Length: 380
Image 1 (cartoon, rainbow, N blue to C red):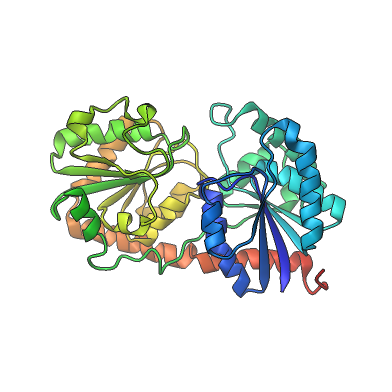
Image 2 (tube, rainbow, N blue to C red):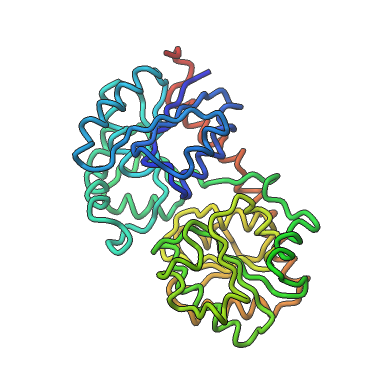
C-alpha cells in the first residue's frame, strides 16, 4: 500500500474534517494507507477517527509561539511514517505541511475548501496565511485540489498558481443517506411533530458563515402564514443556551415549534424527518449538508454561495445571501407545492447526487491525482 499523510489544521466539527473522516476508508479500498496529523491538540472529531481505527497524531500548536516546536514535531512524525505523499487540508496545514514536504522531499497536494475570503469571516492571521500561500503555491504543491469552482476562481484571482489547480467536489455515501420509508418517524415522534406538519430543517454548526440568524428570521415570517410549521436545527452550539443564536427568539413561544438539537449522530434520520432542507450560509464552497440533503431526496432551498447553484442544477431553489425576506418567500413557495411535487423535486435531486456527488466518485478522483503524483514509485 502507498502511504498518505493527511495534515489538517484541527479535528473540530467542520466540512473538511467530516469529508476526510468519511473518505479515508474509501482510500484504503484503493490502496492508500492513511495517517492523520492535526496541528492543534484537541478536536471533537478525534474520537470519531479513532473509532474507525484511523491513527491520529496531535501536534499541539495552540499559538504562534508553539509553531517552531510544532513544526519540528511535524517533521519528526512524518519521518517516522515515511509517506509517499502528503495531502494537506485547510490553510494553516497547507502552509506548514507544504514546507515540511519540501524539507523531506515528499510530494504535496494542497486541499482548499473555502470560497469566501472576505475579512468579515476570516481572521487577520488566516488572511495573512492565505497571502503567503498564494506566493508559495507556485513552488510547493504538486497540485491544489479545490472542492468547488467558486473556491478555485476566488483563490486564483488572489494569486494562487492556476496551472496546479483542479476541482474535485465532495461526495456523500448514498447508503448512509437514503430516503427509506418510515426512517424519520422516530424523530417526529420524539419531538412531538405530527405526520401532517411541515418540517423545515437546517443543519450546521453555529458560525457566522452559516448565518443562522437570517434563517430564524425567515422561518418566523413563514410561521406567520403556516401555523403547522416545525423547524429542526442541529449542529454544534445549536441549543437554547446559545444567546447569540436565540436573541431573536422568544423561548416561551418559539420552543414549541423550533427544535434546537445541538450536535447529533443520527443526521440521516433528521433529514428523513424533514420536508424541506434549507441552507442560509453567506459563505460556502461545496457544502456537505446540501449534498446530504440532495442524497436524501429533499427539496433544497439555499443561498446562492460557492457552487451551491451548480450543485443543485435546474431543480435548485436559490436566493441571495442575507436576505431573510426573499428566503422566507422561497420557503413559502416551496411549502405551497403539493406534497407529491416536492417529492418529485427531491427524487430528481437524489438522482443528480447519485450521478455526480457520491463518496466513491470523490475518492476515485482523489486517487487518480495521487497516482499521477506517485505512480509506481517504491514506498518508504
